[in-house]
Length: 545
Image 1 (tube, rainbow, N blue to C red):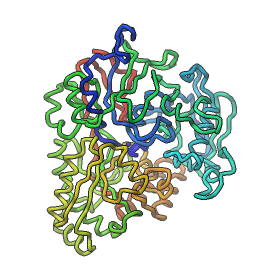
Image 2: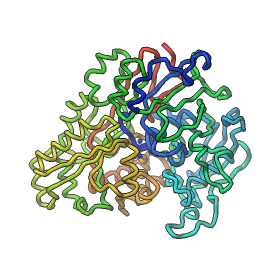
Image 3: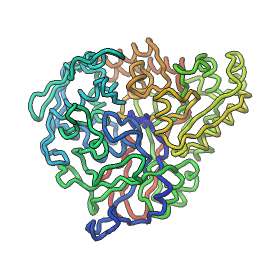
Image 4: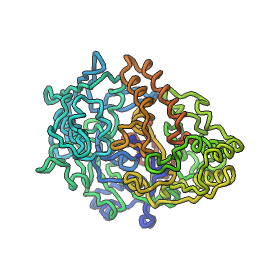
């Protein structure tokens, strides 16, 4: 999901530790059901988050799923992909430059303090400041004054605030952008735009590690205890009794169980040792409908699965003819139908069909043509050996091996497949520019806009503080996205976003392989499980069976 759901980067089938497989159904957080009021938790599989639980530094799917339970966003999205206010009472503008955000009354932090406008201004200024090195800092780049907090490497930041953020009163603040952006209200449901309480900050103005281990939110659930990354195999939460919106009926405890294997999580699901698995492994899809019956769900999804190239860090991939050849050598249709049992669709654009802006057949190089692929690969003097990395905790082995076999057979090259134990591991190596092979990547939409498939993944600004793992940079692409941002209406902006999409199709910094569908399942102990557009569970709707 950083396929930041986040722009969320998608871990795929997200993944728990083998050691938790022994945990039986109905275990209470403390181990003593009586001590927990007899309320056994609803348990969901999850992969280990990449970082501590700070919203502005959480740009992948696992941490985003967890934080979505702890925080209330300013906006959500309905079944028609329309924006609906959540913590916000209203978000208005007359010119797409100056936006006024009014907060609903009744929201309080989990420590009892009221939610106020200053909490958003403080959080956003912190996220945007280059000294804080927040992974989602790039999302504030449109706010007036962002450049002052990002003077560049080796240069001193001389202010702590963006000029464009102003508190009007406790329930109102304004955001002035550097240029018009018609999609601003739409993007405010993303994790990076969550607020932070005063308690998050230490004496030095930095968000403390203690807060990152036990974030205080203003959402439906609060953490029962700190989460110790790398040590804890569960994250335990309870319903916040002062949460002013809809709460679950009949249960108050939630537990995320952390797995390193999606297959192990699926086995636990069938044994009722975990209640919700929101991204089933490819190896289970063909049998899941029979095994789970009505508890198996197959629904549209806005995500995309890619093969990426480290363009800025490995000159072997710099010839676009080579990247086109690799794309044409991949038999997407067979992978979608065979490996994923028909629950994926061959990708032919950088925009998913679930979002306005998709164009069927836009990517000509996404058409399977092994003969042309081999000829073009040779013409580009492609290397005789390739490496393809993927996260083994995400259920990706089967389709990555299929891609590798396609490349071996159709290009006549040697391909080494390299599994990384956890999604966090490959993201860390890509962040550090240590891994220089091709890599599996995925994107789960952060907000329903074509722009979300473009800027966070492929813009020049996203190389340092976004999810641009290719290190791809194109002036033409950046300018077209900017024109889309500054258009007077979303409809007008979409025309420019599609032109930017055409630049990606021409340059192929990534190769789109498939469009996701969400394949999930739940145990016999819960019902009414619904997964939303952001691939997050609607917890208030879940009921005990």
